[in-house]
Image (cartoon, rainbow, N blue to C red; front, side):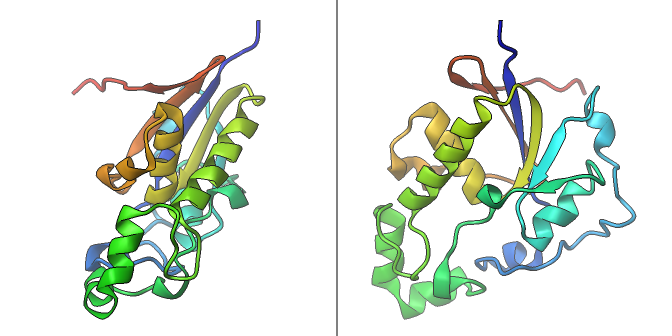
Length: 189
């Protein structure tokens, strides 16, 4: 009998861009991540294999769980092209039609980067690669990647992408045993 794959998706910790309502650049975390290194490693009975996106914010967040995280390019943030670093409010004023098109049509990329459909396809391929990797994987990544993973697993239409909120340092559990499942866990208080 094949062992199941357990995937814990962790959203990176908060950044200045998030707090200012901007699309991300490759910025560092706002927290003192060096002094918090490995402070979350006790969340798991056995330390899982830790993966992270290539950006500074995901690599720094991964150190909260392990000093031995492996960068996985499939976990990189959505490429927002020329909108990187721009405030959403600024784009709304300068390019309202382009922003509206991007919010309503997952196949368009008016910023010149990756469309949400392309992102979902990339994340879906990455999830498929994990289906052959039994054991526990912890992946530190971005809200867009987690949203795309949830759409893929739950087989939701792309229009649901912007209806998922992913908070900094939140955790999402997925399991694969012949089919992907979302697993909601309780935490004792």
